[in-house]
Image (cartoon, rainbow, N blue to C red; front, side, top):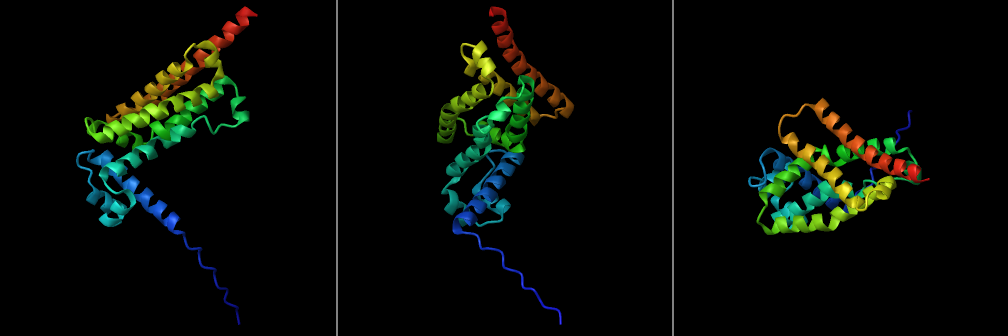
Length: 218
């Protein structure tokens, strides 16, 4: 007789893991609705339906619509907090051109080029003159300096060139943001890649200017 081998049952998820999974489904459903129908028409009932959970589950996890939308903003912007900060010392030793290309590529792939980023802008525009917009603005004022500081850490050459390198970072992030928002229209993908390359070259040129300046004074 052939012995029957019993498969070990999959380990049961903890309550915390189940709660996190439910939250992520709800946030993704909200992002999908923001992208397809806009902020004003995105309601908790439709979010619950899209996440395949009950309205009670949405309210249990987030309380109300505003609290959920605040979490949506956090989810969309979270990758920016690690962009640059998570780079290893070895990565920082890469030539300037490679660093610039990688930084722009990762920023676009993980944040600005994501459909969720464009969906979040529906939230930003739709919530103007509300308490939610004030919270979003507070989030921006607190976290933007962190994003800019990470950029300066990744490109010390630019810090050597600019008296206010964080303002150069502001320009770079603004350019990425602008390209992303323009995707509400039909944009040619190769054209987008060309624009990203222009931003990459802006970073390289700014860093090379500092290198050339240092060489000239030696």
